[in-house]
Length: 206
Image (cartoon, rainbow, N blue to C red; front, top):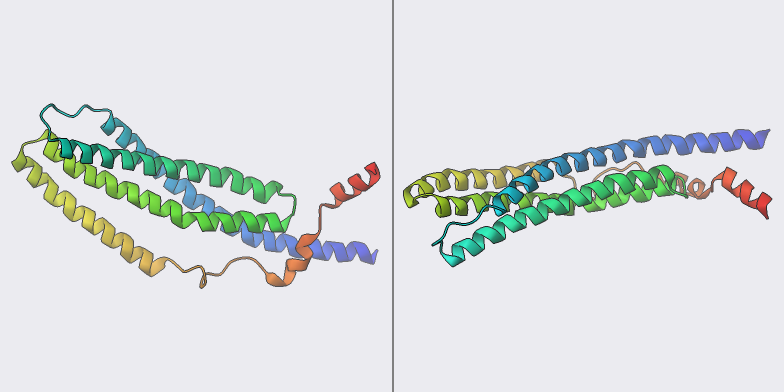
């Protein structure tokens, strides 16, 4: 009987830790969902933009820069969409159905955390390329005076966007060394316990 109570106590502690890590998993999933949805919107805009023919007589270097920026936008945002989709699907799947219990949850959360910075960098790079491509687009499709009039506020807003991104990240983003996670090192030895049902079933099969 004591063995049952001991196992119950260990299981209860493991479930409490998993519930804490579940908060982290949900937070990362929300971040990926948000970036994925926004990236899909920008990718749609870029695809529509890249399919429009460039007018005849456009300077070759202007056309090349315009197409490259638009393709970069499409490429970056599609990478974000795919990364977010895979992280949400396979990360949650590993945490829920992983063969090593709490250790599988730790692996899922830690990898979703590790990928977030790269995905965010791709997302911001796509937005910057999208704004730059619109500046070039004005000089292709409109007269120089109108293009200059439109380019000035676009450049100003682009600089402001980059500034506020830097400011918000600098104020709110925590370094990995300073951030608190839900992993409790003292309970690590109890995380190596296998699935009892699977272990007993395998033993019976032998």
